[in-house]
Length: 238
Image 1 (cartoon, rainbow, N blue to C red):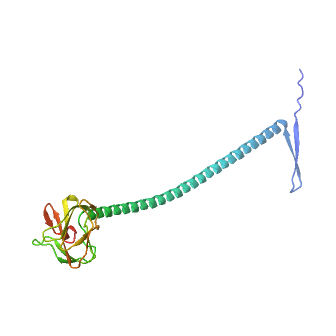
Image 2 (cartoon, rainbow, N blue to C red; image 1 turned 60 degrees about the vertical axis):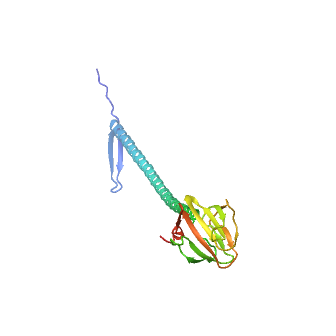
């Protein structure tokens, strides 16, 4: 059998150099040319994949950086909000502390006033009321010189339990206070009485008005049937 002659396809490439103007002929078979083409295609694909991967990586890095920046901005905003809230809290806390202290001070003041007015702690005259004698065992009361127009006033809140004429006095008034305290007001001359038995009186309410100069008021405080130094109840003496 005669073997058929196989014609081998060969491709010729002429390469011209720009430097020395010499040309060179490159002969490539079809198989080699296909190999070269495939290699170039593969290289192109590889380069394309590398570019895509680098682009995707750069995009992911960009997105990550954007998220990090956004997170930092949110953290900064939260820190600013926290600082503002902390400042507001400090201001509110300071205001609350000040208000609480003010209310406590007002409460203490009201309690002090309540104690001051419920016990017979005031001076019994709204005028000059010159003190003539102080408390002693022989004279268990204060003697106060009064002037015309002065008022003898209640030294604490209470109830008028007695208006009478006492031995040696023209007028006598007794007021019952809390905790068993009794205040007694005795005048040696005629006065204008302003209250009646059973009346509830407040501290500084007028009990009677002095109508003559040189009227003397004997002021006495009784507790458990025992006379007390009025100045001790007033806290002017210990």
